[in-house]
Image (cartoon, rainbow, N blue to C red; front, side, top):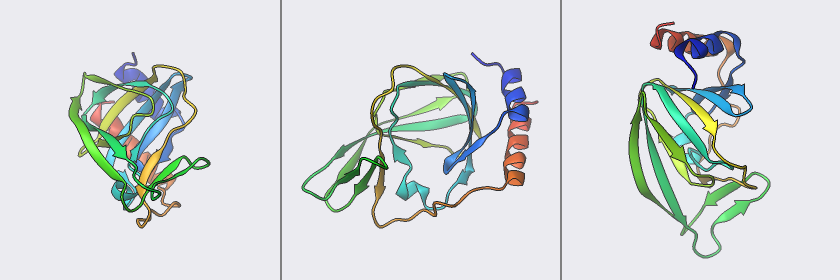
Length: 177
């Protein structure tokens, strides 16, 4: 398990990738990623257009700082109005596709959660949160993102290097580094 010192060092020296779902992420090794979640990092419109997704792998995530709410969903695809694009791995909800929240739970600093592969989920945050995610199983062949056809998120929405450094500095302050 990574220590606060390991995370502080990673914040300073590791390259960070921005994700529109509201986080900066950096790879620690082949099996472990650090996620720095912040509500202000979410792309405008992402709640409706791509926040719900699955992964090709099972994972365990440890909350180091802050808290998050994990929501597990199931989808019913009726008729011919659900479109699954194999190239982009995107399910487009259109017409009579129904999505139901089947579980919701809060995970706070010092706690962990397990996510099954291909489980449709969202992660909700209202404060800065630091998680360390480890792969917990073999990779599956596909994953999916579930979004509304009529909602658009600007794909080019990003943050500047200066903004990224400001967020990294804020996270260093959160952990007292």
